[in-house]
Image (cartoon, rainbow, N blue to C red; front, side, top):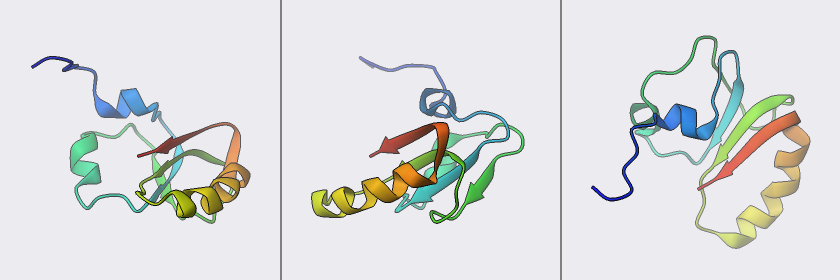
Length: 84
């Protein structure tokens, strides 16, 4: 299939050992799609601080605009935000 990569989704997203991640509006099969997670992953609430990664799912631009500032304050200095 064109464009197919054998790189695991966890690696593409940058999820690493001992990361604290927040998932917002994620699909029910999210963890199935990710496959095996690195050791020590903690799935945190979206109101926690010092997050290494936030993965936010939306199809609403207004909602995204409101939430972006909140996401920024929850991330650690080298944190990652993925918007899908």
